[in-house]
Amino acid sequence: MGAVRKVATYLGLGGAEDYDESYDYEDEVEGEGEDWQPASERAAKRWRSMSEPSRIVMLTPRKYNDAPIIGRHFRDGQTVIMDVNVMSTAEATRMVDFAAGLAYGCEGRIERIAEKVFLLAPAEVEITTG
Image (cartoon, rainbow, N blue to C red; front, side):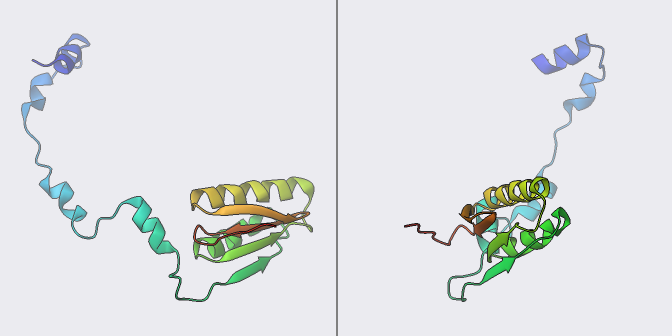
């Protein structure tokens, strides 16, 4: 009797002998054939190929509820310039926090390019300052 079964029996969880059957994992693993890819490869496929022209989108959100629009463009592999000048300071802070999390989660970058103006760049876009 294994240690886990001894502890289960001791704690009164009983029925430890019910778990003596072996499991057949083949049915669960069938979906992991040629279609299965690591998360990093799936994320890389989200970005457009470099043969397509790059696109930069300029957005001026008016309220925090406009965040999904920014997220949609960025996840589609577009560089986004986000101007939060028309938002209140509290909402602008929330929007920048959202954008920073979005950039981090999609392995991109966020840079401040002017007062209350931010650049969200996908991973394959190189940003040079100088």
